[in-house]
View: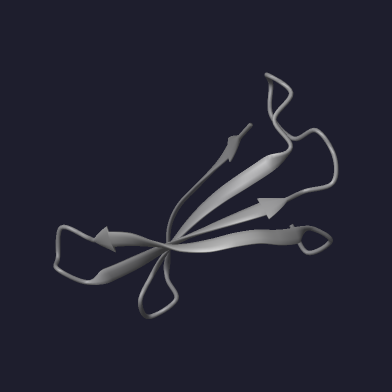
Length: 57
């Protein structure tokens, strides 16, 4: 991910704890998923903690 390019940052709504979260889409620049995905979606909390990350097309 450190060589990737940020494609977008969007509001992801509130977490179950009522905190704001954000989605960051990163282009990895190569195939990273088992189905040919080359983008990574990372969901971050408002304080910067990573809530989830997974490959997307």
